[in-house]
Each structure stands twice: as C-alpha cells, then as structure tokens.
Length: 444
Image 1 (cartoon, rainbow, N blue to C red):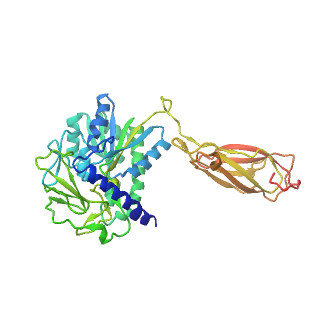
Image 2: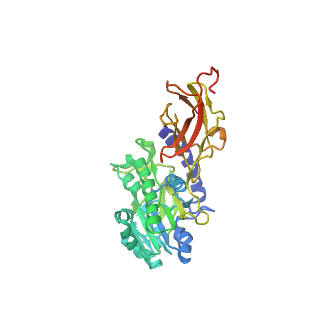
C-alpha cells in the first residue's frame, strides 16, 4: 500500500511537475537560483577552509540520496556533541557516478569525451589513484581512501597513514554496490540503513582517532527505486537517437532537439567540450527500454530523487568548547501530588518534561514499587519517553499499577522507583505510604 501510494501518487505527481519545470527553465542552463551546484562544491566549501589552514575530511557516499542523508544528519545532531547542518546541492546531469565523483574534485574544467570518459582538467578521473593525483594537484598534502581500508586500520595505523595530510577524501559505496546489481537491488532499503550507521562510524573515527573537526558528507548522485515489478508503461523507446552512451535513465548524443517523452538537456553549462553534447532523459521516472535485468534501482536521470545531492557540514565541538552542547536525555516526572495509596489497584501520571529534539534524546525507564528492603511489591511498567510534541499534554503518560497481596504497614514508607533502563541508574525514588484499610472510590 505504501509503495503504491508513493509510486503512483507521490512520485507520479511530483515527477510530472518537476519534469515540466526542467523543460521550461533548465534545458539550456543547468542551474537553480539560490542553490549551489555540485560542480562548485570544492571551490565553494572546501577551498576556503584549506586556505584558512584548516584540515578537511570529505566523505563521498555513492548514491546517498537526500532523504537518507537527512536521517544521518538527525542521528549526528542527537547523538554527538558536534554541530551538523544539511543543505541540498544541484547534482550533475546525467546523475551518474563518473560525472558526480569528478564534479566533487578540485577542477577548472570537466569534459566528457565521445567514449563516455569523464576528464578533470584533461586528466582521467576514474579510479582512486587518478583521484589522488587530481587532489594533490590542488593540495599537495592530500590523499584519498576507500572506507573499507580506513576501517581495516587500527588507531595507530590511521594516525600514521593520515599524518600531515590537510585534505582527505573518503569514498563510501554501500548503497550503490547493493542497488546497482539486479541480484541484490531488493536489499536497497537495508543498504540505506547500513550506510547511515557506517558513515556515522566513519565520522566517529575521524573525530576520535584523527582529531578531525571539519567534516563534509556528500554524494555523487541519488537514485530512484521501487520494489514492485515495472509495467511496460514505465518504459520508453529510444526513438532511434544516435547516441554514444545509452543507459536506463539517460543517453548522451551529439544530436539536439526535442523528442517526444524526453527532456533534452544541453551539457554546455556543466562541461567544456569541443563537441556539443546533449543528455536525453525520460520524463518523470520512466526508464529506457533495454535488454537485461536491474531496472528497479536506477539513476542517471533528472528526477529530484536523482539530482538533489545532500551536503552535510559536520563541525566537531569538544565538550567545554564554545557553543558545545552536551547530549542529555529527556527527564520524566511523576505529576500526582498525593503520596498515599489506598487501593491495591491505582493509576499514576507521568510527564516527559522536554520534547525530544537535537541533543535532547529519548529516555526509557522502568517504574515499580518497592518496600524499605528494596523488595518489589508491584508490577513493573516500561515507559518510553520519546515524544517530540510541543504541547505538554501530548507528553503525558498514565500507567496502572497493582500491589502484591501482602500485608502493608500504614506507618512505614514504601517507594516508587523510576530507573533508567540503559544505565540502570535510579533517577527518582519517591516515598509513599500505603493504607489499604481506607475505603475510597478514588485511586488515592
């Protein structure tokens, strides 16, 4: 049901309107006023910090779609002491790895030759070694590494490997590695969750092992995915266009001019070629008809899900530094004023004092009654305080308790225990008296 609504209503409506906007405003100049272009990433964000003498880490995650990065940003904001911001970049077209990765490197010019190779200032940008060379042209003390190699090192090894390096690019590819294969594309959702955890751990390594404070997280492109099999109406013929590169979501051609059902986008504003190149992409999320499998997970086109590239700027702020904010759990309080129990069945009301946001994180507690020897005398209730509402009444919980059938002394004190389940620390111990001899129509 969710996928049906998403694919046939949300994506259908959104993609139709977006394709119309691209057709009207972006076919000859690939830009949006007020939005940074992905190809300007290094010049606009990295270079100024390098010129200030800062050390910079750039994590590039293949196919880290914006929505996935937004979840990562929330996790970083709530679970670390750093400050984290996310913004969109306008990704390149076609939204493919070789062009997206090249556009994130320092460069003056990008080119695509008629063999489909992407060149950065006339140099090949394919592969890690070529990218390291391009980085070192701009910053001599720089390097690049695959995230698996980073994880394989111990702390001492990492410090030695990156010693003296001012600019470090780290390449991550869990999502695209899974989604881009027909046999594994069904695990795209799992790969997205895995990517969030992996990038979070990479940032922890940079912060804890390498003392890094300036960290960027971005992507080469996004993707379009649906789990249900595609209908024939979701595919379109290539109309006999003479192209030197053809994929599911785009083709590159030296021809130009409008074609039915396609967007023709000039690459003149993105690349500098002696040959004028046009990218033809199907409107909305339609795929080109091609032989072979692997049609559910795709990218290369101009849908928002493919070209809205995330940029997370993470600044590690150590405890005690200016602007530092410690991570704190929300507090939970008993709101009943009476401290006398007159019925073996009774209700208590609790209040989550703050809403969950940023570095104010959820708290889970166990609540129960004990006697003066700490023996449990009631049922135990678990309360998950994870409400994000502004209104206090929406952060209120009512729990029901039952006392055990044992004698109670009205002159003794008994205690309501509120214990944090993660730390096992008792956050409150509230004294009560129990007098079950009093007959009352109320809980107290």
